[in-house]
Image 1: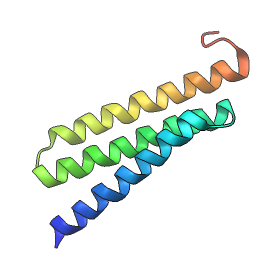
Image 2: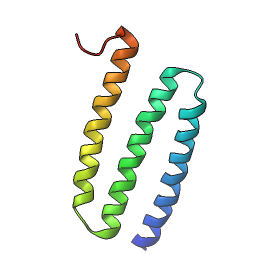
Image 3: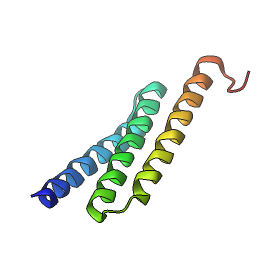
Length: 89
């Protein structure tokens, strides 16, 4: 039962990734593209966690945590660049 749920989650998150890539490429505005990039990172984290559950390995959870930290810092840096034109003050 758990394996079927994990497989369904893989398919649905994969579809969400495809839709995020579409929004990233076609997005009408820069803010939409930044939001799509952030959501792409969140969905990648979800895929890593699902893969970690399916293989029963804790290394993927650590990789997901690292990706979450990097995604947050990247999103903040891009938003700060859009607002002020400079990342460092």
